[in-house]
Length: 277
Image: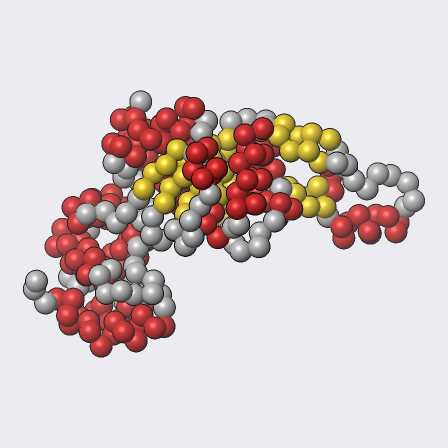
């Protein structure tokens, strides 16, 4: 089962290790939330997207941030329409499903065919929100005072991601299966590039992977992730170059460097990326 899942993920652009494919398979089968930790850019979000494609379910994303509350995760009411309709008529209920605005959590529960719910950067939310989220998912239902209880309509596979900006609660970790993702080795990163760019020249892929991997060792504010590796490869191929040089990287630096401080630090040192050692 894990081998088949790994093949299907690869068919949708994601190369998973045998161990990761096994973990994802178990999480889906047991309907347990899957917590993925690791630095930004290692493919946590991409895994959720590929899993949704494999399961043929919609991907519903809940982006966490400091101060996020239940209403922003669950639902809201279309107050503008309610006020407008109330002004036009004195009859008719104003708190019906037609006025309901499902937020990601409720939308995932209401999807008949099921969904993959991506709770992105859960480490940016507080512990209270963590507890509410997991309790709601465990019960598989939401109580809306004006409408009653909305129960889960289909299977919901939950993927939570964390960039480790803060420690997560023990309660969340106990309820989740856990996967630790890190930067892939050079060989695996070349395989990822070749999966997305099967016609790319092998020497070009080697150049791109070497440059990006060295940039990650430079203590940048935003080290380039796998998406940047793919962006640089795509840009070089689109321009029509078959190899990467210092001047060409400088022209395409915006594909891999996405922060002003990093740009100021990297641009004067580009030649070092070609030095041996």
